Length: 440
Image (cartoon, rainbow, N blue to C red; front, side):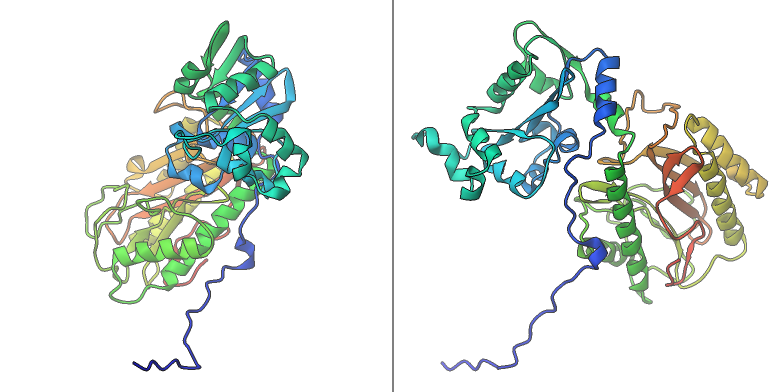
C-alpha cells in the first residue's frame, strides 16, 4: 500500500504563555526565619520538625512533582530546624528526589537521602546504591558528596540521626505531625504539637512570598478575563468552567481536582449561596450575574477570588444599587484592614456600609475572611469560628456576597496585604462588576 505524505504537514500550534507567567523558580528561602525562631522561643521549643508537605516546602523550598501525588500526611521529606543552631537546618529526602536541588536553590545545605521502595529488597546494590539516583555532575558537588555519605536506611532513621547531630535527641521538639513524631521520638525527647506554631509563622509573609502571591493573583485575573471573553450565546455553565480551567493551565497555573471554580451560580430566583461547583449546568444567558471565585496555584502559592460578571450587559436598577454598595463596602473594609483589627470589626464596617447604601438585606450579606499563602487557611486556627486579629504583613482574602436571584446577586472577593495604611489590593480591576465581555 502506498501512503502519500504531504510536504505541507499540518502541525498544531505550540501553546505559549505570556512572558510574565513563565515557569517560576522558588527563591532560595521563602520562610520567615526570624519569626520562626521567635515563635520557637516563645513556645518553649528547642527544635521543630516539619513533615507535612506545605511546611516542608515553606522551610526548604523542596516541592518536586512526585510530592503532590500523595496526601500531605504521607510526605516524602522532612525538615528539622534547631533554635540553637538556626544556620544548620537539615532536610531528609527520598533517594530519587536528591537531584531536585541541582536546579532549585535552597538555603538548606545539609541534604540527606534515605532508601525507599525503589531500592530492591530481593538483592543488594551495596554501598553505591545511591549513585543510581544521582547525576554525575551532582556527585561532583560538595553537597552531593556529603549527601552520599549520609544515606539513611529509612526516613525515620535518618531523622533520628539528624536530630542527634543537632543536639535534639533530648529537650522539647515540636512536630507538625504526631504520627511521624511517634515513629521518631525515643528516650528523653519531649514531643509537642507544632502544627499551629508553623501556621502562625506562615501567616505573616516574606517579600519573596508576596511576589509569588501577587503573580498568582494576576494569573487568576487574566484567566477570568479570558474566560468571559470566550462566552457566546448558547454557552453553558459547564463549558465556562472548563474554559476557565484551560485558560488557567495555559497561563502556567495549576488547578486541583475536581476543579478551581467554587460558586455553583444556579440559574433562577433561589437566593441561596451555593459553594462548590459540581454537576449543575444551564445556559449562561445575557443579563445573568455569574459570581467568579476561583482557586489554583502558581509556584505552589495559592490564588483565590474573583468578582461578579454581568453577562453581555451591565448591572441595572436594583442590581446596580447592590453592585455600587458592594464596591463601597469593600472600600471601607480595605481602609479598615490594619494591624490589630478584629474580624468582627471588619464585618461590622462592611455591614454598616451596606446599610448606609440602603441595601434592605444587609444583615443577610456574607462578609468573611481568611489568610492566604501556601493554603487557603494559611494561618493558625484555634477554632472553626474565631474572632482573630490582623497582623502587619498578613495576606488576607476578603469576601462580600449579597444574596439575590441570578439578575441581582453580587459577589466580590479581594486579596489584601495588611499594612498600617490599610489593605493593599492584589487584583488590579477595581471593585465594580465586570460588564459584558470587557475586563476592567
